[in-house]
Amino acid sequence: MKINIRQFSQDELKQALKDHGQQAFRAKQIYQWLWQHGVGSFEEMTNLSKDLRKWLEENFLILQIVQDTAQYSTDGTIKVRFKLFDGHLVESVLIPVPKDNRYTLCVSTQVGCSLSCAFCATGKMKMERNLTPGEIIDQLVLVNKICEEKYQHEITNIVYMGMGEPLLNYKNVIKSIEIISAENGHNMSPRRLTISTAGIAKMIKRLADDSPRVNLALSLHAADDFKRSQIMPINEKNNLDVLMDALDYYSKVGKGNITFEYIMLNHLNDTIEDANNLAALCRSFRVKVNIIEYNPIGDGLFAKVDTEKVDRFASHLTQKGVLVTVRRSRGGDIDAACGQLANKS
Image (tube, rainbow, N blue to C red; front, side, top):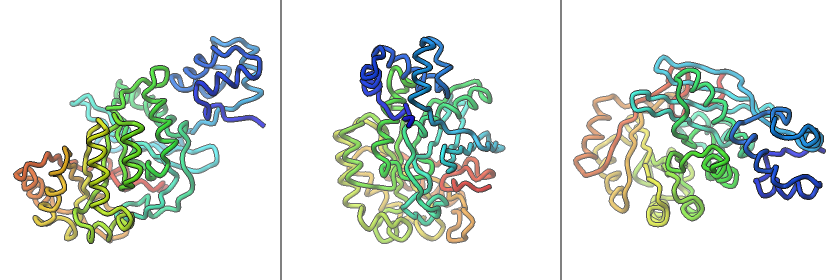
């Protein structure tokens, strides 16, 4: 039975070659073909001998994702849906900001999601399985080709903020980060990578120890436990006191930036009292607040806060000494905005 070759680290690949009487140093070349060049067949590995390529073909396979559809927003955002080897579908979103020379890719880490956040379309899907490191990295490789063709620029930043909860697929996410940041992988600085989490305290601490230079974004969305538990069931076991303790640890051990993501929901978390509670959470460690406009997901549970109220909320936080940015919705016309990924036809 053939084995998916992309499940091996370079050292593991070296040992596999050695065990089968092949030259171990070839592992580096194979690894570069797999991860730097993103090839889909062994025949494309042209600096390997024909005999070695034949042996690889007989013993291994390369399981790659393939593009299913692509949608282009009027604001330049591109959403790409991919089909996995087992037929499941996931989505990625490219958010270009040419004036800042910034091209951010939002990648998925799971098929579906188990957390059931009330404002998120993905949370209403059935959780099917975790993505492998290869399936995560393929999103980068394939969308990067679209980015270069459309914008003549490569992807500059990656956010693990698509479908699924990255910290519930921890091992595969960390391996994908190692490959993306490796010199013979994609050689991207960890400082250009951000993991967005709904808030799993013990895994935030583990991330600080294992990958301290990666940026962290907490999907906060409410600054008191009662409101947060209403919209995010995970808060019952990871309340704000527990999360702030984990983030304090991350700020001391890790070296990446911390951001609070805050989707404003009309008549739920948009008052000055909410702003004061949010400001209080920002006093323990250095953190930036990203205020996000709500993007409807078709269930009618929540409504968008008007722009003037959003700006007043942000201004109040600024007066309290909080570093704030307001992230205007991108890709809403193709259901590519924050919280909208759900594999709609």
